[in-house]
Length: 146
Image (tube, rainbow, N blue to C red; front, side, top):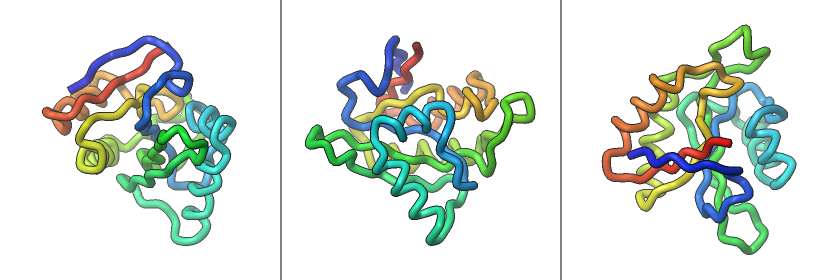
């Protein structure tokens, strides 16, 4: 179930945060860029995985941020590639579905996300939110908007 919140997700007190990323080794724009600036080790772990075995759509990588806060960030492969927003959409709706399933199993107590797949990935939030609702009937997913 979705609960909407207003504010900066990374400045919040959320302990479990997930965001979408691509399978092509890019981690330098949108919400991923904000994560990389605040938690460089999360970007580094994404790149190590990309360079060692690659990413497949729907995969999730959960990482502690290493600052003693107990916060975890999940890198979620929701798009194959990236590019200019007007060339999209890049989001894969089946990948979003798989990511939400995986996250609900890993974090059944709930977690927070930006509007995953609906920013630079060019996805339709009406479609994405419906997928989230279908896949998380008993898990609270807090969606942050600025």
